[in-house]
Structures are given as structure tokens and as C-alpha cells.
Length: 145
Image (cartoon, rainbow, N blue to C red; front, side, top):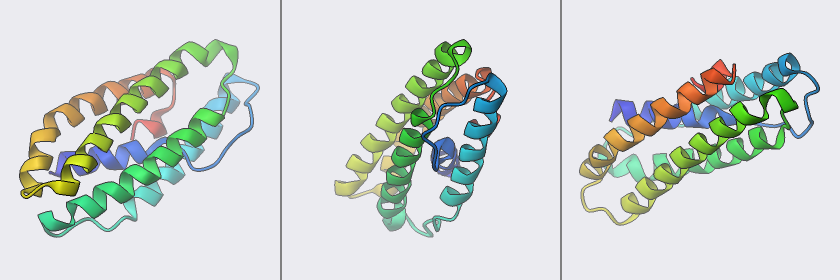
């Protein structure tokens, strides 16, 4: 459960606000890393559930924030030298987001939220690791958590 919550926290690190294009790789990285740092802080402010019955609300709030953050990071246009590596990281993050949505959908009707989260944990952990590695490869450590 802690790993899944950590994965959700890391996913939220993906944006807060930005729409401008960064003209240099260093400028782009500074801008996006700042967005991610702020996003992690905001996601960490979501109260953690104290019992399994709170998992749905927690994940729902987290995935909603994370989706918005991802869109804002994606709105910052990378310089051409980073397009490939950033595109890869964004694609991996989108796959992670899709998996989080699936967990939220399952939790909505789950009679055993703890089992639902536990059964999703390995897939989320794997996707999160791949996503973090892609962010690191792009020089965006704050997005990797």
C-alpha cells in the first residue's frame, strides 16, 4: 500500500503550471523541474487514508490532480534536442496515469479496497519505475520523484 501511495505521489509530480516553450535544454529542465517540485508538494498535501474505505477518495483526488499536472508539463514545449527523450517520458507517464485510472475505476465498486490496491501494486510499481527512469534520462529528476 505504501508503494502504491508513493507511486501516486510521484505521478503527481508532473506539472502545475506552464505553457511557454523553453528555448534551451537547461531552461526547459529548470522550468519543468520547478513544475514537478511544486506538483509533488501539492500531491503530498492530499490526506492519506487511515483505512481502506478511504482509498477510493484518495486515489480519485490524486489521479485528477496528476492528470492536470501531466497536461501542464506536456504544454511546455521542449527544445528539439530533448523532444525524443521528453516524448518518451511523457508516454510512460501517460501509461502510468492510465493504470491509475483503472485502479480508481476498480475502487469505485470494490467490496475489498485493500485487495484491489494490493492486486494493482506490482503493475503500478513496475510502470512507476519505468516512468521514473524515463524522467531521469530526460534530466528531469524532480519529475522522477
